[in-house]
Amino acid sequence: MKQKLAKLSEQCLADSKKAVTSEQINAVKIKYLGRNGAFSDLMKYLKDVPKEEKPEMGKLINDARVEAETVIGEIERDILKKEKEARLAAEKIDVTLPGKEVKTGGLHPLTIVRNQILDTFISMGFEVVEGPEIETDEFCFQKLNIPKDHPARDMQDTFYITDNIVLRTHTSPMQARVMESKDRKPPLRLVIPGKVYRSDDDATHSPMFQQIEGLVIDKKISLCDLKGTLEEFAKSVFSKETKVRFRPSYFPFTEPSVEVDVSCSICGGKGCRICKGTGWIEILGAGIVNPQVLINCGLDPKEYTGYAFGLGIERVTMIKYGIPDMRIFFENDERFIKLYK
Ligand code: PHE
Image (tube, rainbow, N blue to C red; front, side, top):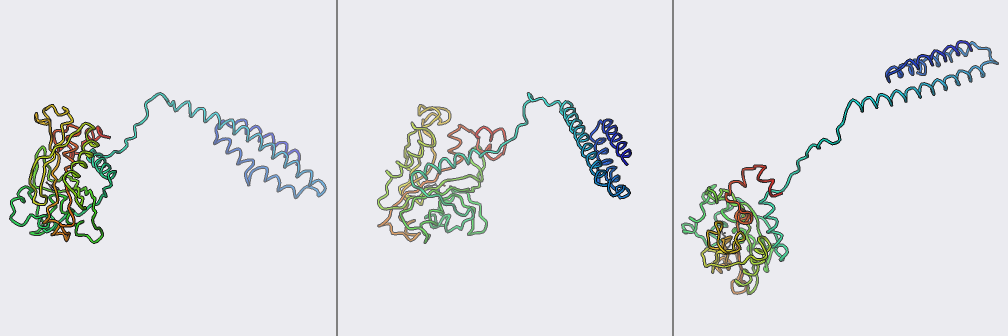
């Protein structure tokens, strides 16, 4: 028995030393130390050993097994280390190579400018609300003092869904919706961003574009309030030096109505190609809410007055960045979008 054990240990050591790969050493491990391996096998013969020798024999086998475990373990560690080194050497990682660029998304320039405009108004105490893009003729036109056959409808080439349902041509119907709403009572201070639709398509007009409507209803609101607020907006979105001027205009839902210009931020007002030599660029329409509109929406014009304005986000963005053609906003050309990240 002792001889058998000595031979087994010797064989095990020899086999272990021969192993050069992790697979080979693993095979040795199974062969000698596995549940049905050679050392476990030898234990079975213990029953044939005389009773008084059993404890000693058992201990000898066990010690030999522990030793075999240690030797195999050491050899295995060595082999694994060498294999890892070989793998690393073969991989040849060049840490000086440039990394792979991960593309990150960004906001569309129109969204950036929209947020900037909204932030400016929020900082002046305005609330942001949104409304439906599919509107009734009543809200899009009639409540705003644009009756059927009114020539002002020609200013806004309308996409009709049915005779009485349209894609809104401006965000102004939201003026009527919030004035009528039971959820809000004056004073009102709102900005309403959103998409609008007109049958129009060239370098400076797109069938879909975005507006921001402004509406303030309170007591004793005047054009001065409007001008001060728009000056603040123009300074924040264009530059601190930007000036604002009003020119008389006409909208059925405001009286008086104005066209609002800002001093050209490209030439500083001296006159250039962008402002067509005038030093001024038109950016929005505005005015004092027509008393008839207040009446149409259930407010008493003797108690309340207000102002409203509507600006085009595309137009503001084009002026701010000197972009000559509106269509580029909607082409999803990454080279363009990337410039404004
Ligand atoms: N709704 C007008 C337009 O789209 C702009 C406007 C809004 C004018 C509010 C006056 C007051 O042209």
